[in-house]
Image 1 (cartoon, protein in one colour):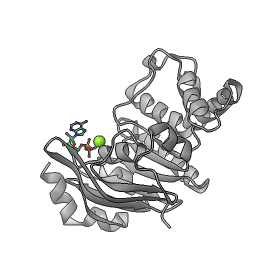
Image 2 (cartoon, helix red, strand yellow):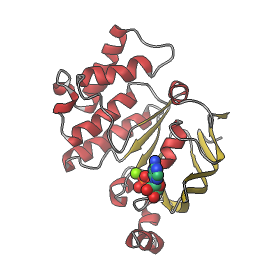
Image 3 (cartoon, rainbow, N blue to C red):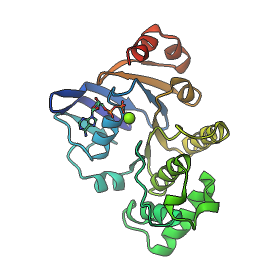
Image 4 (cartoon, protein in one colour):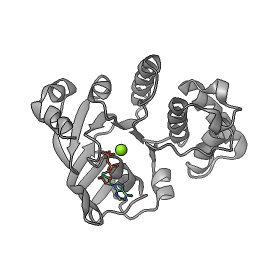
Length: 239
Ligand SMILES: Nc1ncnc2c1ncn2[C@@H]1O[C@H](COP(=O)(O)OP(=O)(O)O)[C@@H](O)[C@H]1O
Ligand SMILES: [Mg+2]
């Protein structure tokens, strides 16, 4: 059984069909790369899975449970954490406190502040942001804010991690480090779906790649095969 299964999902914004009868799944322990040209519906899919948006049709099944109509906090407590492409830091609060929010409120039962602080420090160390822990989030660069998104998501101890362009804007050196971290998380049993606009970045770390185009799956398969498929190039060129 897939850990995550999205069935016949449709999401409209007025006359615009952002997701069109979409089917998608992630197997437990897998790293799935979700790619596609701008506007193909990738972020919308995450918002529907995470409960921030309600679909017009279709279901989201997580670990055998239908979570389609659940509120975001309940979905988070069930083990799904996401990051936002347009970062959502609490700018006035310290980097550490931002991550504590994930640690304390993202788990059920909630961690107390001391346990949350310990967890947040541990996660920041793993991500490589420890030195910034005491700074306000507004002092971070965009690349660092993307990592803060990842840290806050990780602090909720997810089973399924949804990453929306976390790698975009990172230095090449950090890109390599991020890939190593994702592998480590996979070894710990976390299932990861990672959106990237750049196909080549995600093909290095994914077990499988799914290409979205106009709200539907254009094709999916092994990274080496997908990268070579002319339909993918065509979809990107039409951007
Ligand atoms: N909140 C919204 N209101 C109206 N249109 C939206 C909204 N969010 C996304 N869209 C539109 O839905 C389509 C899919 O967007 P999105 O999921 O962000 O694509 P991607 O992440 O693949 O670039 C785009 O045409 C976008 O403009
Ligand atoms: Mg997007």
